[in-house]
Length: 261
Image (cartoon, rainbow, N blue to C red; front, side, top):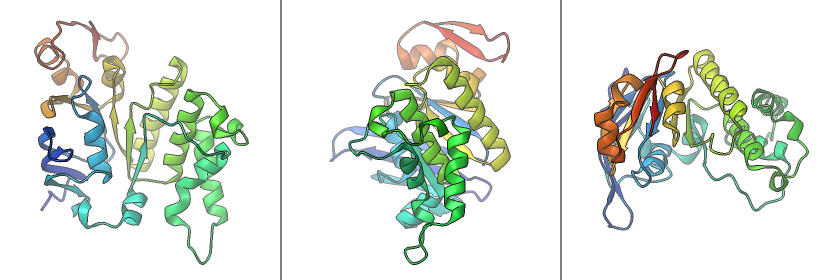
């Protein structure tokens, strides 16, 4: 049984594809509500796989994932969809929908087959597009907008789902510098106002340090270190995980570590 004070708990989670080598080994951690956890680590360390296990897309070969003290394996797909939304790293799609239609898909778990969609569903979708500065893209074909614009549309779709847990897989990878910080500020504000819990993978260590309340450093599928940015981003931890000797400085405004490789 998970601790009742924790919103999300992973206990001894292991995962491998088709009996091959373990991608994740003995993952144990807990999160309270309204925290942003950044997952960092070198390529192939298991970051995306860990997100997929937390979302329920992948089921662990061993161990358990608890959400609000309930085993994720015991929840229906519909119940999971009302609690967890995901923004993938790759947002390319093969269908010809307008951006506003993609965002509205976030309301599907709430739409009754008998009553259909409601005015509230449309209002929530529109508000999500306003928040993510994607309302001007409403009538655009999702295939014909830029990668950064699609990223904002898919973030709007995830927010329209009104989740309690938002999972982001390097969601800033296609965003311009100004939008990276705008979207992070949006998420931090949403986190505070709506008690939203966010887990995001990051390739950019400096952005992860600025954005995250805590960091989880993965190395070969295992947790190398978890703690505040100050506790995780030091020479010893980074050398073990990245096999490099970085230079660390302190951010003059945010007072968090910044890494120069």
